Image (cartoon, rainbow, N blue to C red; front, side, top):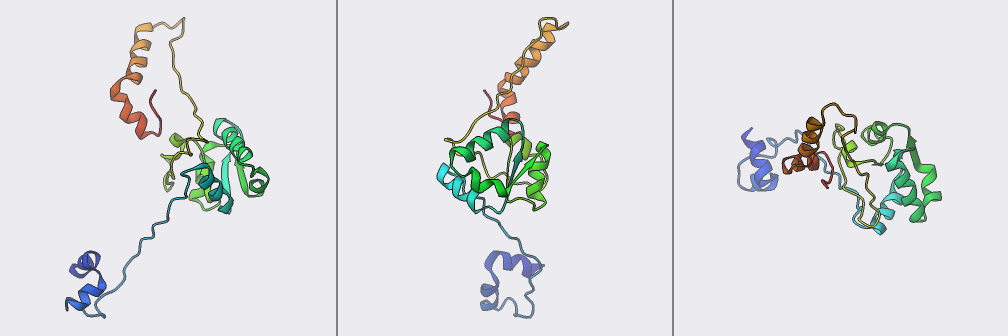
Length: 173
């Protein structure tokens, strides 16, 4: 174990040079690959990333699917993307398509991506392409407990809720 820890800290060559190990003692036991995140830093970079993808996935209907359809149209690449686009009927399936290797990229609400095991968020869309789904709440006129309803709304808008909303991929209003 001492050699594995040292190899991680000073490297194989340094261990050999220092006489801390012989080549026969150093064994590769595992490797970790770090896949670079796709470049989605601007509309141009996003377009390049889309065109380079083998396949992409998004929901056929709903806010995120409609937004993605508008984006590929706006970028002028709808015809090029059509044959490599997987249109799903459920939001959960979109992210799983990437996790299972069926698609290179998936597009969905950030709050729908974060909880999926094995999924990694590349980031929000570039500002010039971004659109938002706005969540609202209110108290019904015939609610039997207006006070509890107001307390709940106040709780959702309180500063203490901000870190939770952000952790779930939402931007507090």
